[in-house]
Structures are given as structure tokens and as C-alpha cells.
Length: 99
Image (cartoon, rainbow, N blue to C red; front, side):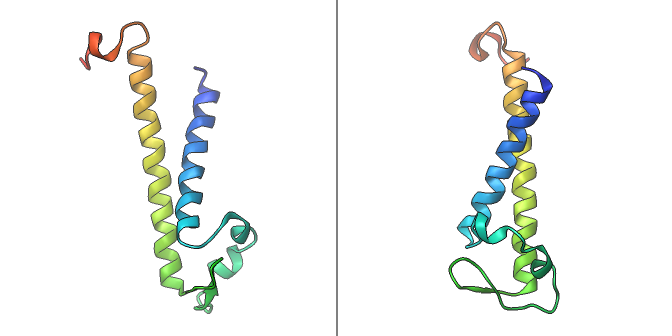
């Protein structure tokens, strides 16, 4: 695979994970558009999500850091898969092993 294609797959996996976590916590993709100023405001402690639940600043930041971690982990997992794919290009993983 070309590096550009692998990069696009990694980015897609990362953003998919990010938006799934945000959606599971009530912030659908349509709600996230244009929310940065409110999201980062220390003075707003009643930011509503898509379900009407209110979020404090510290809760929002904890969710944001969770999404950053999940984005990173998803990219690492895709890189592991890419490593196995490149290592076992001719022989299967069972024939070659992980030497």
C-alpha cells in the first residue's frame, strides 16, 4: 500500500473513533460544528449536548482528553495491523510467525 493510502486509513480510523465517543456521550457530529468557542469557555458550565444534558467545563475537558487518547490508540492499532500486513506479504502469519 502507498503511504498516502495508509495515512488516509489511519486518519479515518482516528476520526471515526473520536466521533463515536463524542456521539455516545451526547455530542452528535451536527452539534460539534461551531462549538469550539463555547466548549473552551471557562465561564460556561451548562453547555447542552444533543440530548439536553448539561456539561461543566471539567466534564467537557475530560471527554475531550478521552477522545484524544482514543484517537491515538486507534492509530497505533492500525499501525500494528499495517506491520502485520507488511511482514506477512508472501506467507501467512501462521507460516511465518512473528520472528
